[in-house]
Amino acid sequence: MLVLSRKKNESIVINDDITIVVVEIRGDKVRLGVEAPKEIPVHRREVFEAIQRSQMASGAKSPVKPESTGSSSS
Picture 1: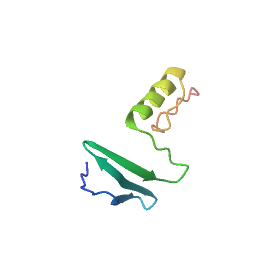
Picture 2: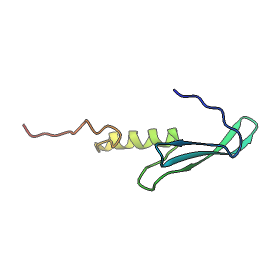
Picture 3: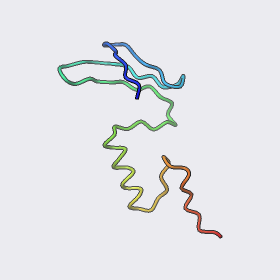
């Protein structure tokens, strides 16, 4: 894990097209802004995990694990 220190209005860039900006620091909370292309989903961890659980329960393939094809042909 890469750990970075940033101040308000400072940012980091991921893969040339995702920018994370420190919008506000208030007490023990930090507000972050995320700029990413529309085709890249961005979720809080708890929302991401709920989506994954829902997909697993419905039997849908997870877009996070493309190696699990679920093919039934022999």
